[in-house]
Length: 146
Image (cartoon, rainbow, N blue to C red; front, top):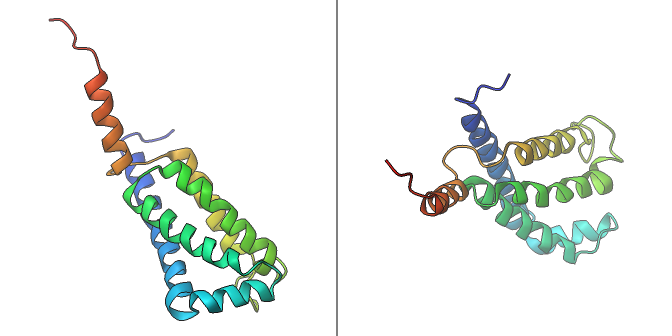
């Protein structure tokens, strides 16, 4: 049974963790590896280098959307191919365990599952998307006669 009193907070916690992880990974690509270095790495594993810039943008925008709770389901779903691509190109060939050279696929696979759980859960507590929706529903709700 789902505890409806705490489930929104579980979705919030998951949303914040996922968003933070995406911002951390985008920051790594931006400030440590640099966008050009990330593009070079993408090309070295057979992925068009330009896709590195798309990936960085997706990680930043998706991470912020998740943290703020804006279009949470869409953001989580849109970020799923980023991780599946990482598994297919780099982490899958490295084996299962993430401590293998180039990291195995266990961590990105779990991260993918967590994104899909977020898709199923939705916004959760303190989401800007939920606040906007709640206000618009409140404005549209008919006034009940007394």
